[in-house]
Figure 1 (cartoon, rainbow, N blue to C red):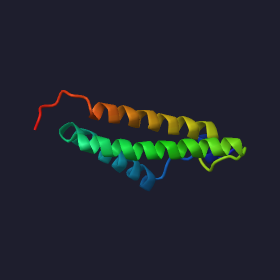
Figure 2 (figure 1 turned 60 degrees about the vertical axis):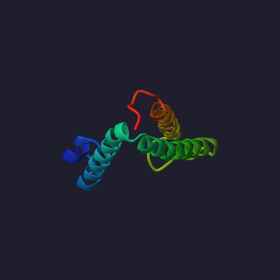
Figure 3 (figure 1 turned 180 degrees about the horizontal axis):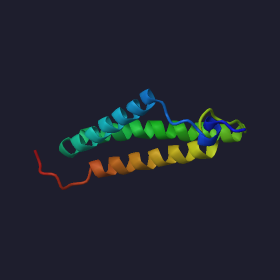
Length: 104
């Protein structure tokens, strides 16, 4: 006979992980809003994002080439996440140089 835990499926994320994710989202949103006033914030975020994106992308490619499985997700998921972070970081960098803000 299946137990209630078997019927529920995967356990939801624990409270500390959920709180950390919410705090990270709030900090990221605050930095994005601050970037409207100071484009240098967006440029620094873009550089950090490009580094993280390339790192995750290369990690996924290496795992796929070695036919290993990561602790979280799949190599294809890591490649997709790395590419997404890299593209969004380049877009943020381009937007940070767009005119339209009043000169100081």
